[in-house]
Amino acid sequence: MRNILKGKLGFGTAPLGNMYRNIPEEEAIATVDAAWESGVRYFDTAPFYGAGLSEIRLGEALSKRNRDEYVLSTKVGRLLSDELEDPAARDLGEKGGLFEFGRKNKIIPDYSEDGTLRSIEQSLKRLQTDHLDFVYIHDPAQDFYGDEWLAQFEAARTGAFRTLTRLREEGVIKGWGLGVNRVEPIELMLDLEEAKPDVSLLAGRYSLLDHERALERVMPAAQKHNMDIVVGGPYSSGVLAGGTHFEYQKASPEIIAKVNKIKNIADHHGISIKAAALQFALANPAVAAVIPGASKPERIAEDKAALNTVIPTAFWEEMREQKLVAANAPLPINVK
Image 1 (cartoon, one colour):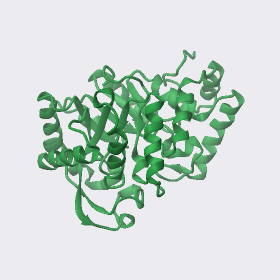
Image 2 (cartoon, helix red, strand yellow):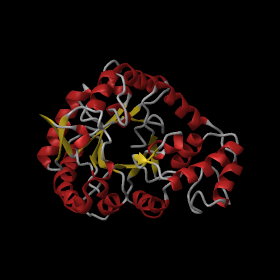
Image 3 (cartoon, rainbow, N blue to C red):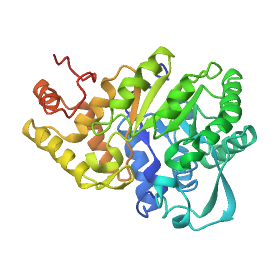
Image 4 (spheres, one colour):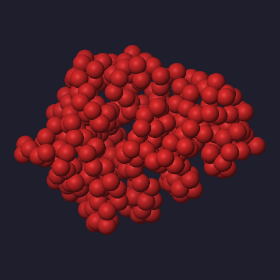
């Protein structure tokens, strides 16, 4: 993937599916436009985000752009039905109520070959495009399926894995992988002889607040297997960017306390936590891009400024001294 991207900062469009709040249409479109004007050329979405709302809004905003000028990824594993349901009543495992302000179309888990092909066909229509660049298999993991996650993973292995591999070989897509909030599915996938993923989207597991497990296992395995990592959720669902959510739920007092420690160090060195969060994620050699989400145009400018901030070496030294980053974590500078 890194050979195709025109920059390391992408745009994660989950918030455009009315995550947490009812976002006005014009605000959503203006946010995509702001990302484009800032130079962003990689956009990621999924049918799950607001039951197709994110894809519809992204497709509308990008319809006026040259398709050859940007990279687009979406996900498979969940089909949308014309049947309606109460979004607030969906069983989303640990992520209950995440898109309660989204569309009411019923969301049906389906990692089969037929489900994968149908999902791509639906997404192409919503996105108003004739092709996708990358496709992620969405959430065959514990946070959504609990004890049933391995059964869902196995369905994906025999369905979506093989289907997307064939589509890549046929030149329909450029690559595929997993799109998950947990490290174990990626570890399991990379242990399979038959799976040859190109890139995986790991959300929330390589951030300032949570990176040890990914650092020890996923990142080395990804490099060994020549699989790029895209880091999603670099702000840990918003708590590192002034929000109140961690892991898509209200942050605990312990998390808030840790964020305050980081903020105090950042304030002392005259930088934003956003700058530290983005640059920390990109410092790992396995990472090809980072895709923070946004639902307001002004947030895009903040992200770009954060990426371009010069962070003093002393900041990272203090973060290590306070044990707020792992001792072996790659940093934007050489800290001894």
